Length: 332
Image 1 (cartoon, one colour):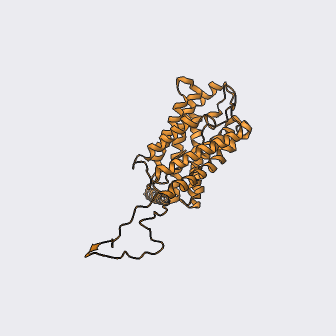
Image 2 (cartoon, helix red, strand yellow; image 1 turned 120 degrees about the horizontal axis):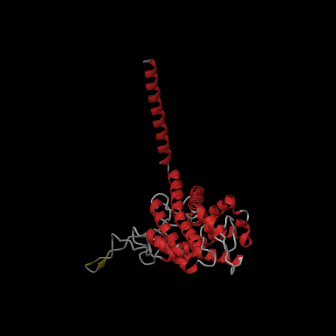
Image 3 (tube, one colour; image 1 turned 90 degrees about the vertical axis):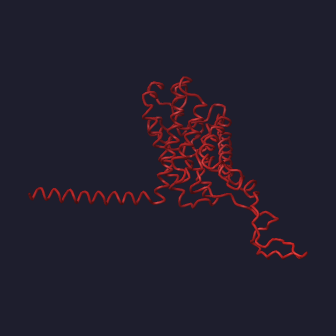
């Protein structure tokens, strides 16, 4: 009887400890920073699994299983699904360049920057691990058990971007900077409520189509990484998985370009939109309680306004709406 009583007390204590642990975990997961970290992790993971998987089909299966168009579609709609996964929690940036620009332009506090980027990097890295595991036998069969970065049986390009033979380093830098600038400018336009934004509920689809369009029209020169979170973590994975140091040295040390150029390009694209488009959008005229009224040929005087009051004649400068919070942003 004593043993039975001791077992009951032990089970009761175990349940209480387990419940306490679960409550603490739940409380931790409800914290804003933790939720945003997990949202960026999961959305980036989803996007990268679909994107890298499509490249694996194209490289390993030839024209039978994939094409350049299928890669564009997979990355584009991978972004769309990623935005549905995390759009109302973190904004689903999935892109360190977008996060950088959002912080640099004051749309989000800098204290969130490392949280977002860490989530994106870990999600991208785990996606590379997943694709490597799923396609391991196909990679070994295609490469003849020799993991190479360049050559006819190269497989490192499944995970990260590399310069083609017709490109040189500085041209690749300008290419990445330009297309990322186009991405950020268009993202601002899609989410600008004071301009002509995407219809509510269609933002994720429109952004996904934007990625498809950029890839189909501007992607051949540098692989349109447009995103440090898309390129660097999978490249690091290939380094430790057996492809070696050449993943960093190939293409005249190309590896740093998809990290630096997108940051600069996204910032410039955001600035261009704010200066040339966002600042020129007039604010809707405010209704005046005391308007001009004609009564017995008398005109009531308009109320005097302070210098800060918006003039109904000269439109004021309206800032572009915040890109953080519940409004999804994208990728890639």
